[in-house]
Length: 147
Image (cartoon, rainbow, N blue to C red; front, side):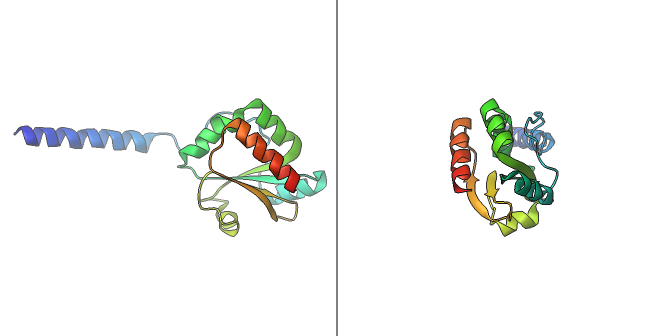
């Protein structure tokens, strides 16, 4: 009887955990972004050509916790936001949604991945995974030097 009660309790507990995970918010964070994300990839390329900048493509997925952390920490840090606004044309694409074809084209298979492109759409630099703000700033500098 004790074994059954323990098993039943374990099943109920597992169910509660599964439900809380299933009901947890998904997608990009709800933190308001100071980054002026372009609405689509084609517009970002055109703007990059006109402004002589690189395109910064943030590939994410709705279930990616590291993508959400990147938003709430690194991409919300004032120095990072300022650098992106000044030097890049940023666009954000859901790699399992509207950005699926581009994610495949650029071989993106882990998230977050940030790809830097020239105005012709050729890759010049890439950041794979989550980085703290200071590390991210160093990678932004590397991208600018390569572009």
